[in-house]
Length: 74
Image (cartoon, rainbow, N blue to C red; front, side, top):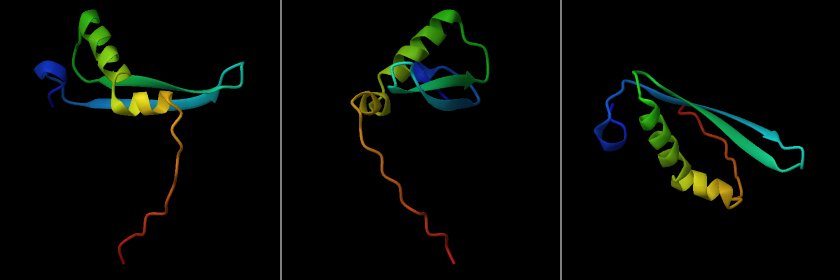
């Protein structure tokens, strides 16, 4: 698997957790896991890239959330 700028790693996973801050405002914390070694500089850059994704920007703007049932094939 190739990451940003052709970085090589085999697997990329993200674990999300949500909670409320003392102020009552909800927040999401994510933990990134990359197989293979990354330097501190590359980790910093990866965190910058993740912070600027469309999903992150949408969440920061307070997007609404909808849900639907997935109809399993019969």
